[in-house]
Structures are given as C-alpha cells and as structure tokens.
Amino acid sequence: DAGVIQSPRHEVTEMGQEVTLRCKPISGHDYLFWYRQTMMRGLELLIYFNNNVPIDDSGMPEDRFSAKMPNASFSTLKIQPSEPRDSAVYFCASSFFLVAGVVPDTQYFGPGTRLTVL
Amino acid sequence: DAKTTQPNSMESNEEEPVHLPCNHSTISGTDYIHWYRQLPSQGPEYVIHGLTSNVNNRMASLAIAEDRKSSTLILHRATLRDAAVYYCIPLYGGSQGNLIFGKGTKLSVKP
Image 1 (tube, chains in turn green, cyan):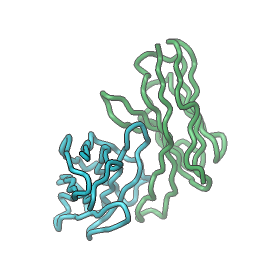
Image 2 (tube, helix red, strand yellow):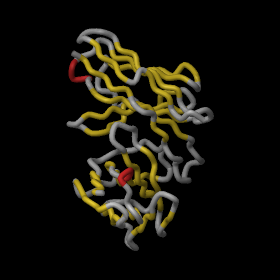
Image 3 (tube, one colour):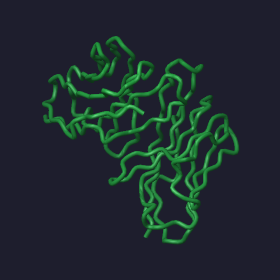
Image 4 (tube, chains in turn cyan, blue):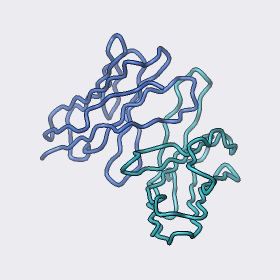
C-alpha cells in the first residue's frame, strides 16, 4: 500500500482565499483523522471520521473550517476564507479500530500539507 | 485524559543506547501507553505500545514501571535516523484512538 496520501504537499495562498486540502487514507481503514501542527500549539486533533461519518469535530477552530468524507477513500479539509493564522502543517491519518476495550490500532500519518497564508 | 511529562530534549551518541523517560502519574488502569515519533519534516509514526508488561519490537523496547506511573522508551543502538521528537501518549483502550500529543522529547544523535 502507498500509505496515506495527502495533496498538495505545499500550498501558498493569500488571505481570504479558499483552501482545500485532500487526503486518501490507507485502503480498508475505517477511521480518518485530521491534525494541525504549529510551533505554538504543537500537534492538535481537528476532526475525525468513522466509516465516513464525522464523530468529533470539537477541535475545529471555527466555522471557517469544514471537513468532508464523501467516500471511504477520500476526505477534504476546507478553509474559507483563509487567514494568516491558519498557516501550519496539516496531517491526515487513518487507522483500523478494533472492538471496544481492545487496543486502538496504530494511526498511520500522511506526509502533511504545509499551508502558508500570506 | 492522563497528563504526561517528558524532558524537552536529550542527546545521545550514535550506536549508544538511549533511554527516553515519560511520567504519566494520572494514568488510568485501562490506558495503554503509546509512543510515536516524528522525524524532521515528516508525519508522526508509531513506535511501540504497552499496558503493563515490558514490550519489544524491531524499533525499540518499552519498559513500564510496576505502578504504571512512568515508562521508558529504549532505543538499543541509536542511529542518526533516530533523531526525532518522541511522544509518549496514554490512550484509553476503549477510545477511538484520537491521540493527544504533548510537547515530546527532541532527541539529537551525534555521530
């Protein structure tokens, strides 16, 4: 398997523009996570999906952020309008989840998308 | 969620063992201890996990204190490629696996 695939790897945009980040999880994984990493806040979970359904979006910073998972092999994270403080590296990760009470499976992370908002 | 305390940074010489400590004194009985690492300019990657007993895999060993309030990740022979930030993450066995990353320990390896 190619692992988790993210695109684009780098994105530079101007304040106010719409930004769409894309993720293809590992085939067969039923959980998908979006994380954001900044120097100030470190790695933080934004939202995660189970079987294409959003389960917890409490980490999404504000309404300008939205995420969708239209099918098991594709997810998007959209920022509209973008602001300079959104500049960060955005990671997508996927995993299996075993029966409750069993160890959650390993999360596999993509290479990330480095977003710069000018 | 259990809180963790890790040293901000550590240094090691190449081909020497490295012991990376983590305190997790508020860990619950059902929390597994996971370790991830993040190499420069890459996403985090899984290293190892355990519950009560010590664990070994091809990457590292995990030594868990008897009271489970601390653990130590052991790299038996550090290589330059092991230079990374190492995160210790208690994770409830029944959770969906959403990881909460702290600041981690930045490991530098000198040739």
